[in-house]
Length: 513
Image 1: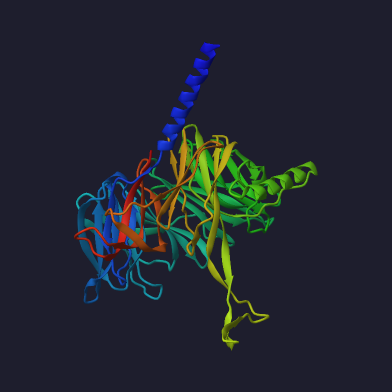
Image 2: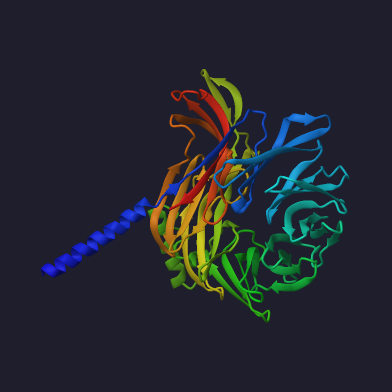
């Protein structure tokens, strides 16, 4: 009996030690960069150069010279210390439209408005030396650009010409531009443009409407010389459309594609599809309705989630199809040990109604709505939660989890949640309004619930007075490092040698231990 008590005590102590170690897991912020900004200052564009640091660029109106705008460049190391800075001058009419980092160099795309016929400009800036080279790219087609990527010694332009998807490839050495085949189709759109730097391969996913009026995903792959090496159409089952998709190559011959599907001619997604394409171009598709996922509705309050789960059970008993409609912003697929991870963020457009002032009634303002008129206005995208799905090489669903993010409203539809795959666990985290939210999971298990960490400030007595919620966030950097950034108005009443009030642009280095 005494021996049994010892064993129980040992297990109890060991489990509590493990819990204590988990409790020590937290967000760390080892360094911070900040620079004071004024109301008329442009905000920085931040470009990750991975282990070479961060590349910051913005317009600097104060240093403009005659007809030329000054573009201020600051390069930080991984400790957020300044490595070098310089100004580059371009015509006032040019604006920064895209950028990419490739092998120690940052490529910056500058274009003029469509009313101008001047060349596009690409600046190739060496992160180590600060030297740069300028390329003038002839505007051969008046494309509405949405994509800019670097593939070996070429630049990839993606967008729309006459409302049809178009991909152009510019060759730096030859100074020529080619239109890649397989695009420019009616009733189609660009879904994803993916560069594999290890293989020097470009993969473009497009959504195309088929003869039976549903939408399929077409996969086109090209070598860096523009040669097409694959053209595959993923054909959905009848009355099903594939809405959005992301791509990853397992090896040189096997591809995995994951995304969202819906009913034919329906714009909201009903679930997740996983497609496996083998070396013989044989494809296997699996569909998972949102109601079939174990944790899709975990973001809801307990009573509401219970009602939804009971509704799902009743539907299954009656043999009826499950119908849950969501907008989902799909992220890139992540390789994690022997699995693959897909993350999507659920959102919906939020509208507020407008009232009209109609004078005073009994000394109080009289507000009313006009009947028969649409008085609503767009108030941003409201995010609800992120769904995290693990699947195997054959496209089989292994587990799912979720992360509630219902505190975000953004006028720009963009990715907020980042993923940090650690040895035995996965960290989910995002930054919104100076607070980093994080959650620790292992497959379907929640190891540590949603935690909140304030953004660290520069001085001990700094207090945040205000922040710009529309500018800021958290981005992947290198390995398991991230950076949080934004604009803050800070008050400091005590620290000597520090301004009473200052407005700063900041970057904080982030890691989770």
